[in-house]
Image (cartoon, rainbow, N blue to C red; front, side, top):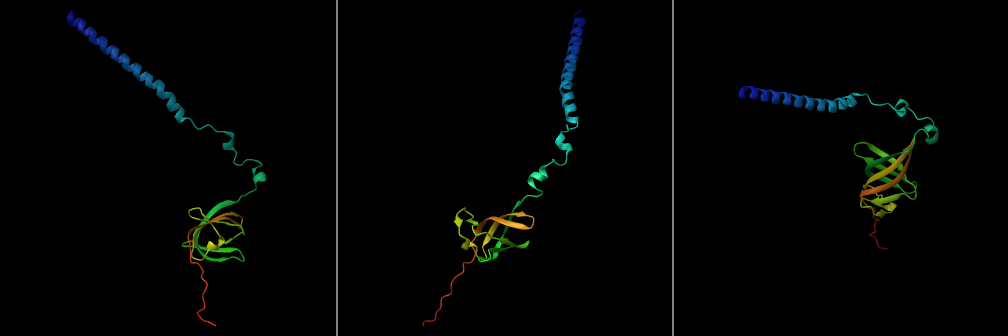
Length: 158
């Protein structure tokens, strides 16, 4: 009888372990099926995705607004009478910027400088906006100063 009882307990444990394994697999399926179904579903489309343009936006804001840009290079020349700054970059050529009378000029540390700091050879960063073919300089940051023009003294005595 012991053998029969031992076999019954072994078969009972085996069936319980099978039931436990089936329940565990069923729990995983209950979890994975919705996750996989949601992951495979196509993205929901909203009205903004179907329309390529917003109506009335062009009328309100215009076709193309100004874009802020940056130009880095060294000053070739600065004409204070005509208010024109000529800056050249190593690989991209030169750029000519119209300068307003009250332009903001600062050093790399943020200290305010006068327009007289815009001397040939100075390395600068020019922040400007371009709308169409017109440039408007917002500020100029002097990275390193250029050569300062010195007055020649006459050695001749009269």
